[in-house]
Length: 270
Image (cartoon, rainbow, N blue to C red; front, side, top):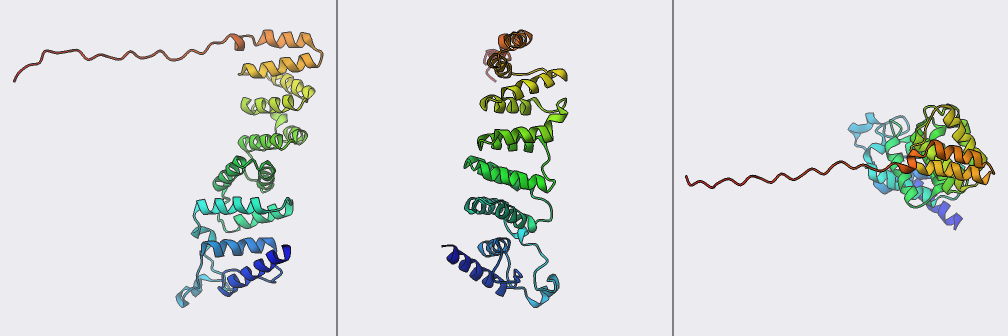
């Protein structure tokens, strides 16, 4: 199976090379070269140039016009997702595929990448999501709280709570005064589901030290439960008392606007 696949790759690369679209140093091609060739062949994004187009080529016969510009955004995303789903579980292969996918772009395609990640999440491909996010961060891209939240969630779903904790401590936990509560709630939930109760209460204490007040009663309840399971009933009661307003708060909807009934006017004959 592996030999037939390699033969198919080599044949594909030879066909592309004959068209002058991809330079190949050896028929024993790397995965990176195969992806370039497959992208060009599947989308038929380049053709042999006419004599007047020769100025648009470099010395090796490759068009300077980037192939990626001729492929629709949707096709790029689908190609990436399908490629990642077909790969074996190898960091080197995934990183190689990602490097090739962005090679044709003038700017880092953060938007299409986000869409591809959502599609992988929909397929519950959490391990792939983690690999892609780590690759993206290794390139210095997507260093936002939204990306960190997505990575922590994926690590949790992939049963890698300890790794999520290490990432939190290294990248996020040192700046708790500005971390969004949504992300803090997520980490508290990760600790709670994975019985990492000491980490949970330590995080909550540090948030309180920054005068950060929880916004949801579910957060307070998890903290209180953690204190109880750790044998600290006094701390449990303290937390429940301090934030009891979250349990009694009622939602106040906006008052319904009364419908105005049009006044009946006497019909006049003109």
